[in-house]
Image (tube, rainbow, N blue to C red; front, side):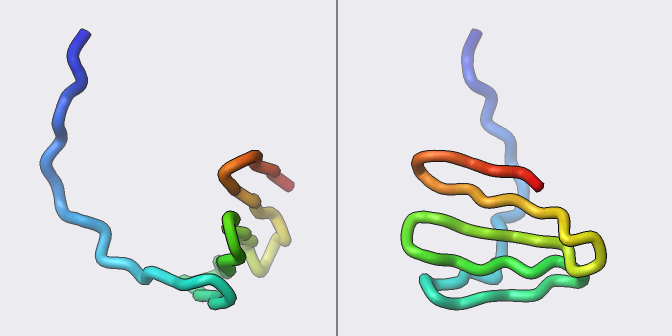
Length: 57
């Protein structure tokens, strides 16, 4: 089976650098070296994703 190329708009950002955080609606994401952490402000549920691992809570 061959991979399919899907056309669509590119993601406009926001791109964040290490040490920065961004809030989009009720979600807050912060970037640290080699990982990203995001959480919902209302529920506290979120995730961590890195090169080595991921966590959900």
